[in-house]
Structures are given as C-alpha cells and as structure tokens.
Image (cartoon, rainbow, N blue to C red):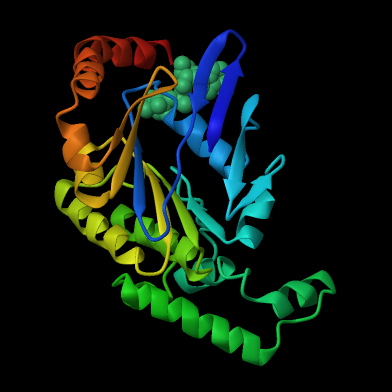
Length: 260
Ligand SMILES: Nc1ncnc2c1ncn2[C@@H]1O[C@H](COP(=O)(O)OP(=O)(O)OP(=O)(O)O)[C@@H](O)[C@H]1O
C-alpha cells in the first residue's frame, strides 16, 4: 500500500498510509481505537476504495480492487465475524474455501455440473489435512453452531487457509479469546509463514508483539511508527498513543455503549 487516504465525510480515517507485507513474514497493524485499522483492512480486501494512493500486489498495481477478486489473486482473509455457514458441517465450510484450486469445479458450477468425484475427493483430502493441522479434525462432521467459540475461530482460519493463499489477511483474530487461546493462536499464525505472508490487524499488543516480524502503528489515520516488535515496544510515540487511549476510552466506550 502506498499513500493510502480514506475519508468518510469530514473524517479522515487514513492519511497517506504506506506499508508492505514482506514475503513469508507477519506484518502487524496496531493502533488505539479509531486509529484506522479496520478501514485499512477493508482497503486491503477491496471493501473500501481509497480516495488516494495505490495497492500493488506482486509487482502489479491493482486498480479498483474488489472483494471477489481476492481469491483469484491468491489472497485469503478472515473477518471479525466468523462468517461460517451454520447449516453446513465444519468440513463443508472448509471445502467452500478451497475454490481457488478447484478450477474445474468452478467451471462445472458455472455450468451447473456436479464436481467430478476426483476433484471432490482431492478437495476433501486437503480440507481434512488443514483441519488436522489446526487440531480440529474431530469436529469435521459437526455443525459450527454446536462448537465452542475458539473452535469456530479455527474453522474460519482453516477455511481461509485451505485455498493456500500467498497472503492471508487476518482482522482481529484474537477477539473473544482467552489468554491461553491467544497464545495458541499466536503459534498457529507463526506456523503459517513457511507457506504464506500474513497481515495481522489486531489491537492485542501481546499477540502482535509475539507473532509479528514487523509492525506498523497507526494513530488518527497516520503511521506513527514502524519497525520490529522490540523497536515498537519502546517507541515514545507508540507509548503516548496507547497511554492517551487508555483513560479517555474507558469513558468513551461506556458513553458509546449507552448511546447504542
Ligand atoms: N463507515 C464509516 N463512516 C464514517 N466514519 C467512519 C466509518 N468507518 C470508520 N469511520 C471513522 O474512521 C476512523 C477510523 O476508524 P476505524 O474503524 O478504521 O478504526 P480502528 O482502528 O479499526 O478502530 P477500532 O479499534 O475501534 O475498531 C474513526 O474515526 C471512525 O469513526
């Protein structure tokens, strides 16, 4: 991303933001509430069109990226909500994610032909492998709604992963997880880097610090710091942004909660 700017009416959500996810590395994007993280994620997914700046993927400038183009580009994503289909088994939910590799199945679905048995079997094999890598193969036949939240999170991750993207975009994957679960998630994310690059948008500092190779810190829509975790941890601008965030936000959150 280079020079990305996004405004909503009078609000500047992003202002000249540039970042790069290096191959086989985890880039973390952090920042206090309202810093612009979600907007940045949405730009990367093609949900929000930036007013200024460019997106470049593998040396090619992407003009007006749209969400449906991501899979074809080799970019996977998970969203804050899990987006699982409750009427489908865990296995089927994960197989749905594999369409990028199932070219034949795409063509057949276009022509309303059934997937070939061979395609189907290969897809199922891959889905089961990913489920087992994430330690949830025992749930393959279950409906997501019957499973605890951390397991459902893993199903969502499995679905993003089964298409073997070259870049995986993760939006606040740690939300709603306990500390132990977060540590496990950290290991899972670290384990992805032998095969893919990851952009992790997250406001849990601990997770970001332990998992990321490099970190970009946003505040009020601008990059205020970038570097390795140990550089970010002691950066005065980052400390000030987070410290300034702590006290007022307790009140603000209550106020917003009451309004809703
Ligand atoms: N659709 C929208 N319409 C108007 N303003 C928006 C919209 N989306 C975001 N904003 C504003 O843009 C700014 C950045 O918001 P964004 O949600 O990207 O921040 P964030 O870092 O993800 O915050 P949080 O951690 O609280 O989710 C905020 O001031 C927010 O109020």
